[in-house]
Image (tube, rainbow, N blue to C red):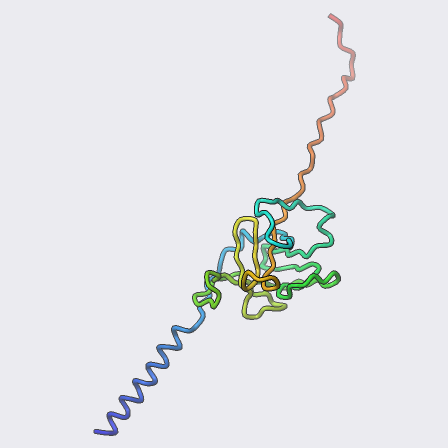
Length: 170
């Protein structure tokens, strides 16, 4: 009888550990990358979220992320997970955009995993034209980016046709 009781207790303990570990497992849910696709430039400070960043040569000195439709990420003048501007350091690799069920960061369940760094995924918040990457609100714990909009090309007025034959006066 004591042997049976020991076996039942052993099975119960194993069952309890198994049940707890399943609750702690991270579940990844892929997210649509449509909003990410394009160029994003790092902005210092919070700034105005309505400010549009227009593409042009003035961006050639700023840290930039370019998300491509084939899940490639190009990082110019820096690294994705290192919050420093490194003028001559560029990277290109694959990225994965997903949500997790058990984030240690309150309210930040979305992640971007980059094949070159951040193997566990970097917490991100995407709202409109603002992308925030990092862990908190203190300086040095996050970077903020604005989506780059293409520069508008001015319309060239059509050149009127010059008549080849003289028109009769009348």
